[in-house]
Length: 202
Image (cartoon, rainbow, N blue to C red; front, side, top):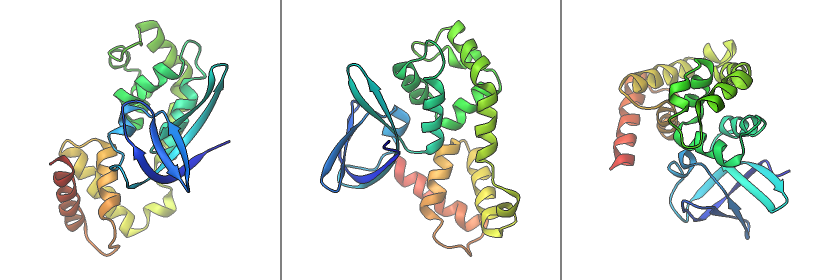
């Protein structure tokens, strides 16, 4: 089983992307939420993967986070939900947003996604709500890590970015990019994250 790939991004299209891993090219089907966050061509990328073997061939799916990969795996277990609808769900909502929709039973949000009707949305919630709650708990820091001052600074900065209107995934990506100084305070980290986000959106 191929669980994770790291290499150079050769092609970045709406269809499969092409990742060169030590001279071997892997085609990966990715949701739009992953495609939009990938680096440019020629840069290094790391993707969590799921290999789906079907009669028409072997299909490799790629995700930027293990949470989104795990969500994809749970989605395709639901009766009537194939890879196409699972990708549509993860293209329209990032992992955190989809977890929240399932936990909070937000049917109206789910039915706005192409291919998801009311019955499908209700079935998703019924079958995946408990699993979504477990995944959400796994994303929370443990008591031992919460006692680390640098992690508290990171958490406070992330909360501030979300209050400013950024999505959790955007905030996390920006903070990871600028968290090279463990001694910086919340204000400094926040300023650097905002500068990073402004550059990314330019």
